[in-house]
Image 1 (cartoon, rainbow, N blue to C red):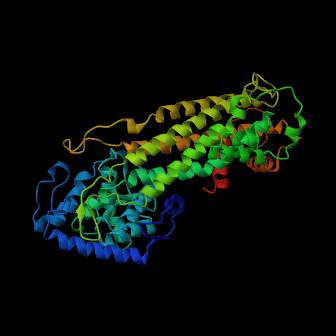
Image 2 (cartoon, rainbow, N blue to C red; image 1 turned 180 degrees about the vertical axis):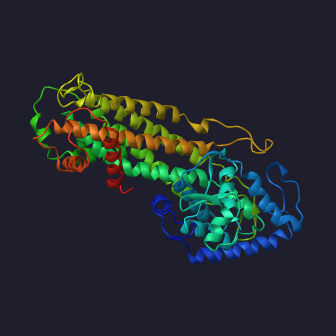
Image 3 (tube, rainbow, N blue to C red; image 1 turned 30 degrees about the vertical axis):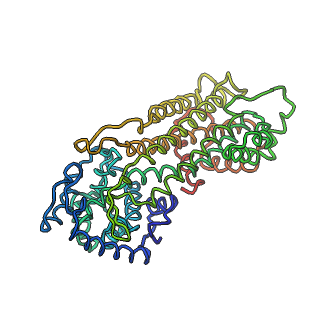
Length: 494
């Protein structure tokens, strides 16, 4: 994969982070870095430039002597590595590294090409910095976690290599890589950006968007298993309220249930209307689809943006701005967290509808005989309820909070890093809830056989049947749910 600072996508991030695709710098981007670096070195001899020959934050009025400039950059990395908490998952760290490298390639940061190349060297050699998950307020960039990434480039801190945590210097030496000696502005440029929240948010959004398509199919299986109507998916209904996502989901539902024998068998039943969790899937899931698309558009701008400070421009101007502030991502992370949480609320209610004998004509809790002796899948609705409730707490907007830092110089912060971390947890919970619905809908649909559902639904049914044993009596079901979760990820291309 060629990285040029301009064309990175969420799919690219996933491929590098989770599939370990090899990365190289595009030639024209490399030339731009060289040009901007020469420009910065000339200007800094004559001018006082923040972060190049001054202190940082509220200490910006302290001029640094030329002999101390290299020490200044190393010091900011070491002093700012103040992260705490459990280490971030390695794939997410890889995503963060890619986003930071891509941003630096835009040339506005004034760093040397060798610095960006070293980030890619670590990615390509699968040397992953150990990055504590907590410590960023998402304003002057994701300073603390990005400092932990930066430490690995200079041979400080720790990395994961071949499954073991080792000192960064040892990891570098094992791959014949020398520690980078940071030059003017490079320490600041490594730290001062939104890569932490954008990398995590990008992975979360991509995974959620891929699982979303499987969630629509699973909901179609539930609709047929519960003898729901397809009339609410009529195109005319959604043309009367033409939200893009709503029309898309309605079309998918109608297509996924086309040709179902189960649907044909109850066309003349006396039920007038289905419950909302069956009837309004296009309206609810459609709104989630629109949210996913919006958040994707925000992130794909962000991951191809310069989020450093100050920025160095083609004519030599050096401008201190605020592109490091994470507000655009923070708001988007909160928006998607709320949307996915409500999607989970609908899933949990359909899960209850699948097992609750008061709400369907199926065996109680999908037992296969000996009700009472066997509890069936009763407790899996509890699990779905617990995850739905947890997501409701996690969906509280991080961006609603702010707390001043750096001696009141940074007096408004985004909290986007926490917003991104919460979104990751919500996506994980939602994936499990989709898996719970899938297995319960599979069990429910088996009671409708020999009448068949649609081709698409029956294909999913067969995929699940191949990995899940027949249900005869109570047993431990946990492994089956995990296998179904893995299946859905495979079907989603994840």
